[in-house]
Every structure is written in structure tokens, then in C-alpha cells.
Image (cartoon, rainbow, N blue to C red; front, side, top):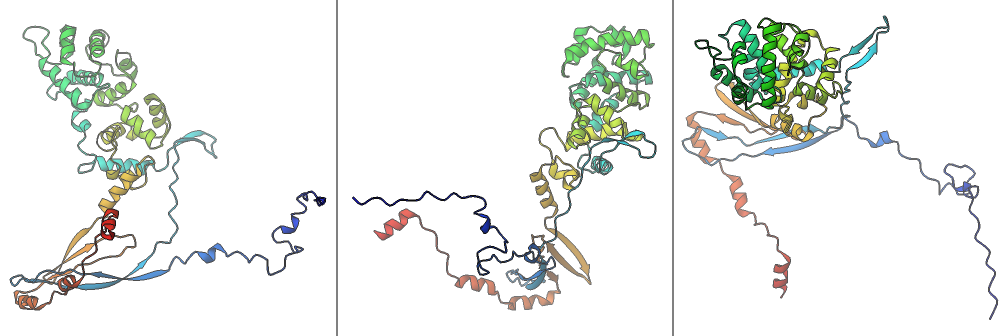
Length: 434
């Protein structure tokens, strides 16, 4: 056998050996023919934003001629010049929560309000107004501050407001209103001949089991019965049969927390010393990104650090009603909310917002009277803003003869058009071939 040829080992590829292939080297062995052409500038590729396209939009409306009708339809062809949207997208809204800042002049630390908070607050206030999407909430008619009897004395009204707040914890306003109505009508009098109903004397004298049966519909009614029976002697002995007029005195009562105390001071005594923060206020303000708090007390402290004091009482009523009607805990109505439609809410569900915008941008019919003629214009917004117009003009009865003479060309064209072929399945094709 002839000897095998000696094969040299493969040449080692190093970084220096590959240097001749680097891009843009003038000393490269490749000629000018193999050089890469210069890349096209990206600005030359993007079309001009003012580029327009012309479209011919034909709108044909044909009606069967009626001899007695004083109307006839005009076939209009409109050439619409549309502009394709090539403008850059709008800049995103910058949302900043409440944050601590230092004044450059004085050096004092203060809390800056969240961005767009006032615009959001006014939008919610407009929705909660009469005729708004968030009007007629349960809190408007069955809130704790509205459940006291108007015919009762001021002292009894204050006591009933406190009882309504104590029963409202973990309970819907509708259920709480029913329980309060039963107490006001069915609570037995403390002595024969005394008036029945909800007052301090009757609560002191009533048996705990009877009281528990009257409020059984509210949440945690067993605990609330115990709290009412414990608080009644404290009101009699320490406060002269009335309710406390201070925040410290109210929170000292069993079953009364900070939220109830602030709401009771506002509703019963007409003094606002703090914000009543319940689950709706805590949930919505965190949902909007005003702050990131873990419990209602932290939310109250965060809100009071920057919210103007004249809105401390109103914000609870606004947000509770808004949370009951529009921004529900489950099944939020983002398509009906002005915050979602206006891009103010960072937690808005995009699909619901788009559906809500389509409903508002649907076809609208405008009636314009001009010289006795009524013109109906239907406007439809498309992606390229092409407008279709169907014009119907009222004429005198003498034009009915002309209507009978107008030929209906569209029906004739449809008669001569061949029918469309129906698609056939694979089995039908096989049977045809066989």
C-alpha cells in the first residue's frame, strides 16, 4: 500500500488572523467591489407625516319608489381626503404618589400631593352629582349619618348616629338601615308608658337576647350586642346620658374605632377633626396610586398629610358612593368611569375602557333645519376618519311623479350577477372524482 500523505494539522484561528475581515478597515484585502454599501438613514425610510391619500367613498342608498311618499333618496358620491395617522403617539402621563419634599427656601419638609389628584377628585365629584353615573348610591340615602330619626331630640339623634356607626362595621348600608329601623320601631320601652324605640334608656333596660334578635342581620351581631350593652352604662355615668364630644372619648367606648369616631364627630357634632377612612377609601386611593398603605389608619394619616382640610368630610361620602356604584370591588365598570376613559386611572381595565370609548364614538344622528328641509347626517368614525353621509331631502308632494320614473339600477345589477360558488368538502370532491 502506498504511504498515506502527511496531513498538516488545522491552522489555529486567532483574533489577529480574523482582523482582516473587520468592517471598515482600509487595509482589508477585499476590493471596493466587495465593500458593504452605506446603510440607509432611518429618517429617509419613515414617510412624511403630512402624506395624504385620496379615497373615493361611495355611499349608495336605494329605496323602492312609492307613489304617495313625498321623499326621494339622493345617491351621493363623496370623495374624501383622509390622512393616515403617522404622528408620534402622545406622551404617557406621569403619575407620582404623595411624597416628602424639602422646601429649598426654608428647608422645611412637607408632603407633596399626588399628581393629577385634583383632576381625579373633580371627575369623581361630577360622577357623584345628580345625573352622574355614580349618583344614587346606597350611602346617599342609607348612610349612618342619615339613619337618625328627624323627629327625635338632638340628644337622641346623636345616640342613634353612634349606634348606626357601631352596627355598620362589616355590614352593607342596606342591611344596616333595616336593623336600625327595627330598633327604632320594635325596641320595647324601659318603663310602662314610656316611648318605645331607640334611645339610651331603652337600651339600658332591654335584655341582651332581645337586642341580639333585633340586630341579627348585621355582621358580628353577637359582639355588637355586647358592645352596645357595655357602652350604654358608660354614656350614662361618664357623659350624662349623651355621647362623647371628643375623639378620645369616642374611641374609649367598646366597639368604636378611629373611623367611627371621626365620622361621628362630623355627623353628630358637626366638627371635622379627621378623615373617616373605610374599606372603599382605603381601596380606591391605593388603587389610584396616591399612596401605598397597608391599613385604613395609615391611609388616614397619608391623606391628612396633603389633602386640603375643607375636603376631609366630603371625601368619605364621595369615595364610598363611587365604590358602591362604579369602582366595585368585583366587576369594576371602567367603561363607564370618567377616570378610565380619560386615562387618569392607572388600574383601569383596558378592554372595558376601549369598549366604553366605542360606545361613545358610535353613530350619531343630527337633525338640521334649513329652509323647511330636514337633513339627516349619519357620521361614523373609522380608523382613517372616512365620513359617510346619507342625505334625505323632504320635497313637495308634486315630486312623487318623478320618483316613479327613477330607475332602480342596483336591483338589476344584482339579478345579473352570477351566484357565488359554495365551498366543497374533501368527501364531496372524492365522490365527484369517482
